[in-house]
Every structure is written in structure tokens, then in C-alpha cells.
Image (cartoon, one colour):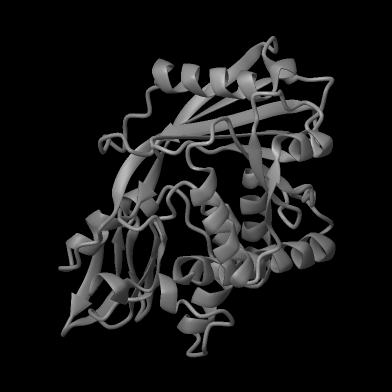
Length: 322
């Protein structure tokens, strides 16, 4: 219950904010309130997910467990191999990179300066207080710094004496040619061993995007993003098993990326105990988008000396004694 409550407040706040942003900005990131089905192939794990859903409902999320037949009534492309699913009607899908550009445009319009190709090489600290950052283009003097570099966050934090418990792991993404049978909802594959994970959805242009990763796999070299044929193959087989109509679609491209995981599978967000002025927003465990708007809003409030609209207590660095 506690785990559900600490994250659901952020996700529901983000969902509301994204709807407001889409309306105000002309929906540049194609927000579609489609709902999500998390599907299961075996009875193993069903009771575990049923308990998790009960905790989510208790925390205020609209969700429920449904049978395989009920899932197929909602999404006819699902096969008979799906025996149960978690249904969340309030979930939505969007185009992630378009959301990032939309945030950047709005921030710039409000006076923010965005410096690309300017990696922070060092956080400047004096007297146990942040003084600024160093970059190849010079130093920036400031009393407030947020480390939002996800898998790269431990490097910057470690250099000022803070050991962030963040582990990098790779995810794989594959995009198909446009598919005539469009999925009504976003689908997620749940596996009881927590080693693999996958999602797939139809985008506005008809292409199917599927992604996944080996979340129980060893840490990786963050700068190497080679495709993993084993992970990609397993993901494609699972998607094809759940939705056979997509099995024959040609793949048009695939890539890998680096994600950041924490020991309790929740992000680390908020001010650090020391040095003063240093905050973190990292470790999003492969699913940062559902938290993005609320985390940004809350961090902005903290930097301005206000209380965050949704409490960061459940994701605070303090839970790791940081």
C-alpha cells in the first residue's frame, strides 16, 4: 500500500497536468487517453498482481483485474493465451520526444536558457553548499543544482560525496511498419520473474512501437547501447504470442538505450541532505514518463522555496539516508 501511494499521487498529478498542457499547447505530443492492459500468460503471479491492484485502488487509482475473456472484449487482438490482465482506463499514450520538445519550447518562452552540448563536468561546492557547475563552455554560478541525468547521476553526485544507489541497465525498442489492425490500448507484458518486461502500442501513424528490457540483468556500460538479439527476440515472441496479428509486421528500425534502476524500483526525487542546494531527480526505473510532469512541477516549486503540490516524501533521497 505504501509503495502504491507514494507513486500514484505523482502519476495521477502528471496525467492531469499533461491533459492541461495538451489543451493549452495544441497537443503537440499527441496525447491519447486510451487505457492500459497489463497482460499475463500464466496463473503464476496472478494473485500477486491482484494484491498489487488492490493496493493501487486503495491509493486512489482507477484499476482492476480482469479475466482473459474480459481483456479480449476490450482488445480483440489479444490471443487466448492471455489468461488475465490488469486494466487501467485512465492511462494515456503520447509521443515522448515531442513532449520533451514541447517542454523545452515552453521553458524557453518563459525565459529559460537551454544549453545543448554542454555536459556538466563538475558540481562546484564550497563550505558544504553548492556554488555552481563547470562545463566545457565555462562555469555557471548558482546556488541550486538538480542532478537529472538518470543513469549518469551517480558520477556527479559521487564527486561531491553522495553515493546514489542507481544501477544502469539497457532497454530495447523496436518499431514496425504501419499496421492495419491498430491496438485500442497500450499493452504491457508482466512476467513473474521480473527479469523481462515489455510494452507495445500503436502510434498515430499506425506504426507499432514495442520496448522492453532485462531488468534483472547485470549493470551495463552506459555508453554502449548495442542491440541485444536475445532481449529483442524474447520481446517480439511475447508480443506475437499476446497479439498474433502483429507477428508478421516487418521491423523498420530498432535501438537500445540506457535506463537507471534503484533498489526499490522507485525514483529518487528531492533535495539531498548535503551539500545544501543540491537536488536529484533520477533513477526512474524505465518508466519516468508517468511521473514527468509532476516531478518537474514539484522540483520547480522546491527551487522557488515552495512546497511541492504532491509530496515527494515517498521518493525522497532520505529513504536511502542520502
